[in-house]
Length: 259
Image (cartoon, rainbow, N blue to C red; front, side, top):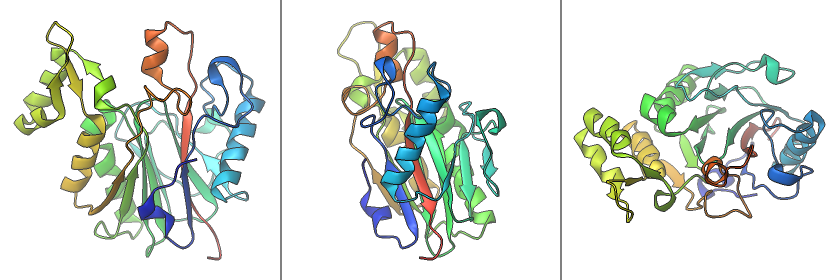
């Protein structure tokens, strides 16, 4: 499990970016797969999620994750849902309720954890390129403000995701960003391969969107999910190998009652 400095010192808040290690899954999902979308027994996923909560020190909490659709939609969690069939189709979750652990599932996309410790408001966001481009980070901040958070106090942490060196895209991908804002050229460099391919800096783009939204405390993981196979699942790596499926890593934040 990985922690981030700007969230670790907050009283009453537990968090963690879980690696793929020390779970019960096997094969392609080895071993801490936390996604119900994978083709493996549900009991394995439930046990992995239980272990994840234990590792962040929130054993008594209920873990919830959304049915992620690469949107900028946010759900305010007041009560945990029972299973994946009840999960809202959103890419961000916020709450001010203790013992509800908010989780985000990723396999190259950027997991973002948010906290305003004074207001007792937390959030998570699933920021792949589509969600980040549509403004999922900003939407999460706005939803937290409606619960009493202040963006000047919100701390954010961007967890392990695919690094620029591993994220090759076509010119049409880059053009989408350049047409939106000329300054987005900063997030692209030419790939060493021929054919006009580019390399995209996803985490830099997410970070700067959060900065532009007014956040001043932002920690960014330098881990590369594509390259670090022993630690992380990767959708792109699985595609390049023509594998049938891939596991999903989980990142969690939770308010702990009584602290």
